Image 1 (cartoon, helix red, strand yellow):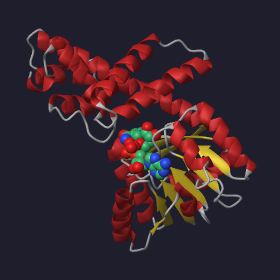
Image 2: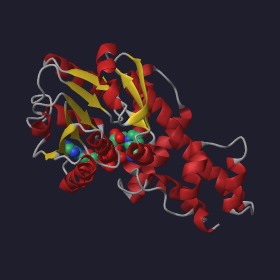
Image 3: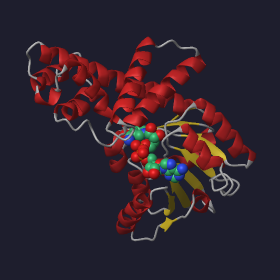
Length: 302
Ligand SMILES: NC(=O)c1ccc[n+]([C@@H]2O[C@H](COP(=O)([O-])OP(=O)(O)OC[C@H]3O[C@@H](n4cnc5c(N)ncnc54)[C@H](O)[C@@H]3O)[C@@H](O)[C@H]2O)c1
């Protein structure tokens, strides 16, 4: 079994490491050669085997049984699929392409059609669990696509996640991922507003966070992101620009399925403003800094 892995960032890198540890023959490609070298070093040490660093996505995909992608956005995913040096022209007939990225339905239908025209199966398989889950192999993987193709690929997906679910036909994985991840951003903004209200009223931020964690406001976001707001790190491991992409995908999906989501519209605008102000590559909780600046109060020192 030979696996191509394209996109070795915060999520793709540790996922590829886990596939190397499981003993799969790997061919890697990322625009950033440092990311490839990091996986090569960690994977080779763990599995005692050579891992190919390909010069292009097509070279990685050539001769592979399965190609994984973990890439930033629909435009890049489509380019990696369809360009001259892309994966679809290089994968052999009968191979499977599994996209682990957070993506939209419009892109999904175009890339799936292009894959089908070359007799390549496609599964949308976005993930949740963050960089800790990617490193530990405990991601939740939400898969859309043909049930038989899923059944064939499940044992491999179980090397990178411990909750691997087939949700339905093509696109079901992307839809579930977007509907799930939206709460992360709504909750982060809500958490920061609750903390700000408490602090402005005279309750220290760490006391306020403890109260939220032990009450009806308790959540993964409060437990995991609350401390990262209070220590001023704003949680490295996920880019602000990718968080805004997820909110933009949410509004796109809402339009395409006819859902009206007023809170999502407001939160998308907050993340857009934060990206404009602080930059794409800042940590995702920098969205909270907008609120801190509006209030003239930084929660880390409150
Ligand atoms: N970080 C998280 O916590 C998290 C959690 C769940 C889902 N996701 C999703 O997973 C995907 C990857 O996220 P990430 O945080 O790892 O992003 P990242 O920015 O850390 O990694 C993306 C990688 O893709 C590479 N890349 C970009 N364009 C490329 C191209 N044309 N060819 C080859 N490589 C290219 C980049 O160099 C980078 O290494 C995104 O769709 C994101 O929304 C991220």
